[in-house]
Image (cartoon, rainbow, N blue to C red; front, top):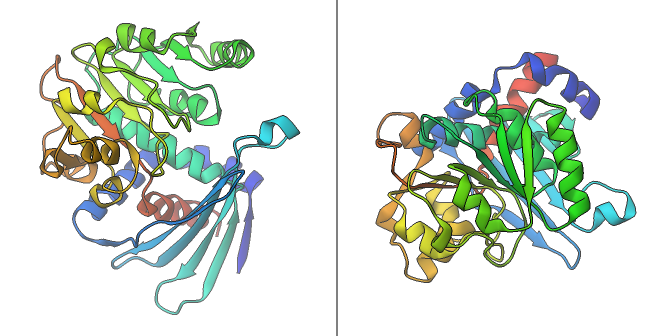
Length: 312
Protein backbone atom coordinates (compact mmCIF):
# COMPACT_ATOMS: atom_id res chain seq x y z
CA UNK A 1 0.00 0.00 0.00
CA UNK A 2 1.38 3.38 -1.04
CA UNK A 3 1.42 6.32 1.36
CA UNK A 4 1.13 9.69 -0.34
CA UNK A 5 2.01 12.80 1.67
CA UNK A 6 0.55 16.27 1.55
CA UNK A 7 3.79 17.60 0.03
CA UNK A 8 3.61 15.02 -2.78
CA UNK A 9 -0.02 15.94 -3.42
CA UNK A 10 0.72 19.67 -3.58
CA UNK A 11 3.58 18.99 -6.00
CA UNK A 12 1.55 16.86 -8.42
CA UNK A 13 -1.76 18.77 -8.50
CA UNK A 14 -0.58 21.48 -10.95
CA UNK A 15 0.12 18.70 -13.48
CA UNK A 16 -3.50 17.48 -13.40
CA UNK A 17 -6.43 18.94 -15.34
CA UNK A 18 -8.89 18.37 -12.52
CA UNK A 19 -11.91 20.38 -13.65
CA UNK A 20 -13.04 17.93 -16.38
CA UNK A 21 -12.19 15.00 -14.10
CA UNK A 22 -14.52 16.24 -11.38
CA UNK A 23 -17.12 17.29 -13.95
CA UNK A 24 -17.20 13.66 -15.05
CA UNK A 25 -17.79 12.62 -11.45
CA UNK A 26 -20.84 14.90 -11.19
CA UNK A 27 -22.15 13.66 -14.53
CA UNK A 28 -21.77 10.01 -13.49
CA UNK A 29 -23.48 10.71 -10.18
CA UNK A 30 -26.54 12.28 -11.78
CA UNK A 31 -26.67 9.51 -14.40
CA UNK A 32 -26.89 6.86 -11.68
CA UNK A 33 -23.41 5.53 -12.42
CA UNK A 34 -22.07 6.17 -8.92
CA UNK A 35 -22.80 4.54 -5.58
CA UNK A 36 -22.67 7.18 -2.83
CA UNK A 37 -24.25 6.33 0.56
CA UNK A 38 -25.48 9.10 2.88
CA UNK A 39 -22.80 11.19 4.56
CA UNK A 40 -21.43 9.94 7.88
CA UNK A 41 -21.13 12.76 10.36
CA UNK A 42 -19.78 13.43 13.84
CA UNK A 43 -20.75 16.77 15.39
CA UNK A 44 -18.52 17.43 18.39
CA UNK A 45 -18.49 20.28 20.87
CA UNK A 46 -15.49 21.90 19.19
CA UNK A 47 -15.69 20.63 15.62
CA UNK A 48 -17.25 18.38 13.03
CA UNK A 49 -16.14 15.32 11.08
CA UNK A 50 -17.58 14.24 7.72
CA UNK A 51 -17.13 10.73 6.35
CA UNK A 52 -17.84 10.44 2.62
CA UNK A 53 -17.39 7.30 0.58
CA UNK A 54 -18.43 5.57 -2.61
CA UNK A 55 -17.39 4.35 -6.04
CA UNK A 56 -18.09 4.76 -9.73
CA UNK A 57 -19.62 1.74 -11.42
CA UNK A 58 -16.98 0.12 -13.60
CA UNK A 59 -14.20 2.08 -11.91
CA UNK A 60 -11.02 0.72 -10.40
CA UNK A 61 -11.31 1.96 -6.83
CA UNK A 62 -13.59 2.88 -3.99
CA UNK A 63 -12.75 5.72 -1.65
CA UNK A 64 -13.39 6.50 2.00
CA UNK A 65 -12.67 10.11 2.96
CA UNK A 66 -12.54 11.57 6.46
CA UNK A 67 -12.45 15.36 6.72
CA UNK A 68 -12.79 17.53 9.79
CA UNK A 69 -13.41 21.18 10.57
CA UNK A 70 -12.43 22.62 13.96
CA UNK A 71 -13.07 26.31 13.50
CA UNK A 72 -11.37 27.60 16.66
CA UNK A 73 -8.06 25.94 15.73
CA UNK A 74 -6.41 29.13 14.38
CA UNK A 75 -6.47 30.50 17.93
CA UNK A 76 -4.01 27.76 18.91
CA UNK A 77 -1.98 27.90 15.71
CA UNK A 78 -3.61 24.99 13.89
CA UNK A 79 -5.50 24.87 10.57
CA UNK A 80 -9.27 24.49 10.75
CA UNK A 81 -9.35 21.50 8.39
CA UNK A 82 -7.73 18.09 8.48
CA UNK A 83 -8.30 14.57 7.20
CA UNK A 84 -7.20 11.85 4.80
CA UNK A 85 -8.47 9.68 1.96
CA UNK A 86 -8.28 5.89 1.71
CA UNK A 87 -8.20 4.25 -1.72
CA UNK A 88 -9.16 0.57 -2.15
CA UNK A 89 -9.19 -1.83 -5.09
CA UNK A 90 -12.80 -2.15 -6.20
CA UNK A 91 -12.34 -5.75 -7.37
CA UNK A 92 -10.55 -7.21 -4.34
CA UNK A 93 -11.08 -4.76 -1.45
CA UNK A 94 -7.32 -4.47 -0.97
CA UNK A 95 -6.10 -1.09 0.35
CA UNK A 96 -4.16 0.65 -2.39
CA UNK A 97 -3.17 4.00 -0.93
CA UNK A 98 -3.43 6.32 2.04
CA UNK A 99 -3.51 9.92 0.87
CA UNK A 100 -2.40 11.92 3.90
CA UNK A 101 -3.63 15.21 2.50
CA UNK A 102 -4.54 16.81 5.86
CA UNK A 103 -7.76 18.03 4.28
CA UNK A 104 -6.05 19.69 1.31
CA UNK A 105 -7.72 17.54 -1.36
CA UNK A 106 -11.12 18.30 0.16
CA UNK A 107 -10.33 22.01 -0.04
CA UNK A 108 -9.20 21.72 -3.67
CA UNK A 109 -12.06 19.57 -4.91
CA UNK A 110 -14.50 21.97 -3.19
CA UNK A 111 -12.94 24.95 -4.96
CA UNK A 112 -13.06 23.13 -8.30
CA UNK A 113 -16.77 22.46 -7.78
CA UNK A 114 -17.22 26.21 -7.35
CA UNK A 115 -15.45 26.81 -10.66
CA UNK A 116 -17.64 24.20 -12.35
CA UNK A 117 -20.79 25.87 -11.01
CA UNK A 118 -19.56 29.23 -12.32
CA UNK A 119 -18.73 27.70 -15.70
CA UNK A 120 -22.36 26.67 -16.26
CA UNK A 121 -24.26 29.27 -14.24
CA UNK A 122 -22.34 32.54 -13.99
CA UNK A 123 -23.15 35.48 -16.28
CA UNK A 124 -21.04 35.61 -19.43
CA UNK A 125 -19.62 38.93 -18.23
CA UNK A 126 -18.66 38.80 -14.57
CA UNK A 127 -18.33 42.39 -13.44
CA UNK A 128 -17.13 41.73 -9.92
CA UNK A 129 -16.64 38.60 -7.82
CA UNK A 130 -18.05 38.67 -4.30
CA UNK A 131 -16.49 36.45 -1.65
CA UNK A 132 -18.17 35.89 1.71
CA UNK A 133 -15.50 34.72 4.13
CA UNK A 134 -11.72 35.06 4.43
CA UNK A 135 -10.46 31.53 5.10
CA UNK A 136 -8.76 28.85 3.04
CA UNK A 137 -11.79 28.17 0.86
CA UNK A 138 -12.30 31.87 0.20
CA UNK A 139 -8.79 31.96 -1.25
CA UNK A 140 -9.02 28.73 -3.24
CA UNK A 141 -12.30 29.76 -4.81
CA UNK A 142 -10.61 32.76 -6.44
CA UNK A 143 -7.64 30.66 -7.50
CA UNK A 144 -9.81 28.14 -9.36
CA UNK A 145 -12.24 30.71 -10.74
CA UNK A 146 -9.33 31.98 -12.85
CA UNK A 147 -9.98 29.10 -15.25
CA UNK A 148 -13.58 30.12 -15.99
CA UNK A 149 -13.68 33.94 -15.80
CA UNK A 150 -11.18 36.71 -16.61
CA UNK A 151 -12.67 38.94 -13.90
CA UNK A 152 -10.10 40.05 -11.31
CA UNK A 153 -12.20 42.61 -9.40
CA UNK A 154 -13.23 41.30 -5.98
CA UNK A 155 -15.26 42.48 -3.01
CA UNK A 156 -14.80 40.42 0.15
CA UNK A 157 -16.81 40.37 3.37
CA UNK A 158 -15.41 39.05 6.63
CA UNK A 159 -16.02 39.23 10.36
CA UNK A 160 -12.79 40.99 11.35
CA UNK A 161 -10.65 43.82 10.02
CA UNK A 162 -7.42 41.84 10.48
CA UNK A 163 -8.74 38.88 8.49
CA UNK A 164 -9.99 41.20 5.74
CA UNK A 165 -6.66 43.05 5.51
CA UNK A 166 -4.73 39.78 5.33
CA UNK A 167 -7.05 38.42 2.64
CA UNK A 168 -6.79 41.63 0.63
CA UNK A 169 -2.99 41.54 0.74
CA UNK A 170 -2.74 37.83 -0.08
CA UNK A 171 -5.09 37.92 -3.05
CA UNK A 172 -3.68 41.20 -4.40
CA UNK A 173 -0.35 39.37 -4.69
CA UNK A 174 -2.12 36.91 -7.01
CA UNK A 175 -3.28 39.65 -9.38
CA UNK A 176 -6.67 40.56 -7.92
CA UNK A 177 -8.00 44.03 -7.23
CA UNK A 178 -9.61 43.44 -3.84
CA UNK A 179 -11.85 45.72 -1.83
CA UNK A 180 -13.17 44.79 1.60
CA UNK A 181 -16.45 45.49 3.34
CA UNK A 182 -17.97 44.89 6.79
CA UNK A 183 -21.44 44.91 5.16
CA UNK A 184 -22.45 41.59 3.61
CA UNK A 185 -25.32 43.30 1.80
CA UNK A 186 -22.81 45.27 -0.25
CA UNK A 187 -21.59 42.02 -1.80
CA UNK A 188 -25.03 41.28 -3.24
CA UNK A 189 -25.52 44.87 -4.34
CA UNK A 190 -22.31 45.17 -6.39
CA UNK A 191 -21.22 41.66 -7.47
CA UNK A 192 -22.80 39.30 -9.99
CA UNK A 193 -20.77 36.17 -9.14
CA UNK A 194 -20.79 35.47 -5.41
CA UNK A 195 -19.29 32.59 -3.44
CA UNK A 196 -20.12 32.02 0.22
CA UNK A 197 -17.54 30.05 2.22
CA UNK A 198 -18.39 30.36 5.92
CA UNK A 199 -19.70 28.02 8.65
CA UNK A 200 -22.43 30.56 9.54
CA UNK A 201 -25.52 29.33 11.34
CA UNK A 202 -27.66 32.34 10.50
CA UNK A 203 -28.12 33.92 7.04
CA UNK A 204 -25.48 36.41 5.94
CA UNK A 205 -27.11 37.38 2.61
CA UNK A 206 -30.64 38.79 2.36
CA UNK A 207 -33.00 38.77 -0.60
CA UNK A 208 -33.60 42.53 -0.29
CA UNK A 209 -30.08 43.12 -1.67
CA UNK A 210 -30.28 40.59 -4.52
CA UNK A 211 -29.73 41.95 -8.04
CA UNK A 212 -30.87 40.49 -11.40
CA UNK A 213 -28.23 38.49 -13.24
CA UNK A 214 -26.52 37.17 -10.10
CA UNK A 215 -25.00 33.72 -9.58
CA UNK A 216 -24.52 32.64 -5.95
CA UNK A 217 -22.45 29.56 -5.20
CA UNK A 218 -23.12 28.52 -1.60
CA UNK A 219 -20.23 26.41 -0.32
CA UNK A 220 -20.29 26.77 3.44
CA UNK A 221 -23.58 25.22 4.48
CA UNK A 222 -22.80 21.50 4.44
CA UNK A 223 -24.63 20.42 7.61
CA UNK A 224 -28.18 20.69 8.91
CA UNK A 225 -27.25 23.54 11.22
CA UNK A 226 -25.33 25.82 8.84
CA UNK A 227 -26.99 28.52 6.74
CA UNK A 228 -25.61 31.48 4.75
CA UNK A 229 -28.59 32.53 2.59
CA UNK A 230 -32.09 33.68 3.43
CA UNK A 231 -34.52 31.09 2.03
CA UNK A 232 -36.24 33.89 0.11
CA UNK A 233 -33.16 34.08 -2.12
CA UNK A 234 -33.84 30.57 -3.38
CA UNK A 235 -37.53 31.37 -3.75
CA UNK A 236 -36.91 34.24 -6.17
CA UNK A 237 -34.16 32.45 -8.09
CA UNK A 238 -34.80 31.37 -11.66
CA UNK A 239 -32.63 28.29 -11.20
CA UNK A 240 -31.78 26.33 -8.03
CA UNK A 241 -29.02 23.77 -8.57
CA UNK A 242 -27.83 21.05 -6.18
CA UNK A 243 -24.64 19.02 -6.40
CA UNK A 244 -26.74 16.17 -4.93
CA UNK A 245 -30.48 16.50 -4.55
CA UNK A 246 -30.62 13.69 -1.99
CA UNK A 247 -27.95 15.37 0.16
CA UNK A 248 -29.50 18.81 -0.19
CA UNK A 249 -32.84 17.52 1.09
CA UNK A 250 -31.23 17.10 4.52
CA UNK A 251 -28.42 19.70 4.59
CA UNK A 252 -27.42 23.01 3.05
CA UNK A 253 -29.35 26.02 1.76
CA UNK A 254 -31.87 23.94 -0.17
CA UNK A 255 -32.79 22.04 2.98
CA UNK A 256 -33.63 25.29 4.79
CA UNK A 257 -35.66 26.64 1.87
CA UNK A 258 -37.59 23.37 1.56
CA UNK A 259 -38.19 23.23 5.30
CA UNK A 260 -39.58 26.78 5.34
CA UNK A 261 -41.77 26.17 2.28
CA UNK A 262 -39.99 28.70 0.06
CA UNK A 263 -39.23 26.11 -2.65
CA UNK A 264 -40.41 22.61 -3.57
CA UNK A 265 -38.30 19.59 -4.46
CA UNK A 266 -39.47 19.83 -8.06
CA UNK A 267 -37.77 23.24 -8.33
CA UNK A 268 -34.29 21.71 -7.96
CA UNK A 269 -31.94 20.68 -10.78
CA UNK A 270 -28.82 18.57 -10.28
CA UNK A 271 -25.46 19.93 -11.44
CA UNK A 272 -24.47 16.68 -13.17
CA UNK A 273 -27.53 16.90 -15.42
CA UNK A 274 -26.51 20.41 -16.51
CA UNK A 275 -22.99 19.18 -17.26
CA UNK A 276 -24.43 16.30 -19.30
CA UNK A 277 -26.71 18.64 -21.25
CA UNK A 278 -29.88 17.05 -19.90
CA UNK A 279 -30.92 20.25 -18.09
CA UNK A 280 -30.31 23.87 -19.01
CA UNK A 281 -27.97 26.07 -17.03
CA UNK A 282 -28.11 29.85 -17.33
CA UNK A 283 -30.04 30.84 -20.46
CA UNK A 284 -30.44 34.60 -19.99
CA UNK A 285 -28.18 37.35 -18.59
CA UNK A 286 -30.74 38.62 -16.06
CA UNK A 287 -31.45 35.24 -14.46
CA UNK A 288 -30.76 34.69 -10.77
CA UNK A 289 -29.09 31.32 -10.26
CA UNK A 290 -28.13 29.52 -7.07
CA UNK A 291 -25.81 26.53 -6.68
CA UNK A 292 -25.95 24.72 -3.34
CA UNK A 293 -22.78 22.63 -3.10
CA UNK A 294 -22.70 20.35 -0.05
CA UNK A 295 -19.82 18.19 -1.29
CA UNK A 296 -20.33 14.77 -2.90
CA UNK A 297 -18.12 11.70 -2.58
CA UNK A 298 -17.67 11.51 -6.35
CA UNK A 299 -15.44 14.56 -6.06
CA UNK A 300 -13.25 12.68 -3.59
CA UNK A 301 -13.24 9.54 -5.75
CA UNK A 302 -12.13 11.48 -8.81
CA UNK A 303 -9.43 13.59 -7.21
CA UNK A 304 -7.99 10.72 -5.12
CA UNK A 305 -7.85 8.46 -8.17
CA UNK A 306 -6.19 11.15 -10.30
CA UNK A 307 -3.51 11.86 -7.67
CA UNK A 308 -2.80 8.18 -7.02
CA UNK A 309 -2.49 7.30 -10.70
CA UNK A 310 -0.21 10.29 -11.30
CA UNK A 311 2.14 9.15 -8.52
CA UNK A 312 1.87 5.35 -8.75
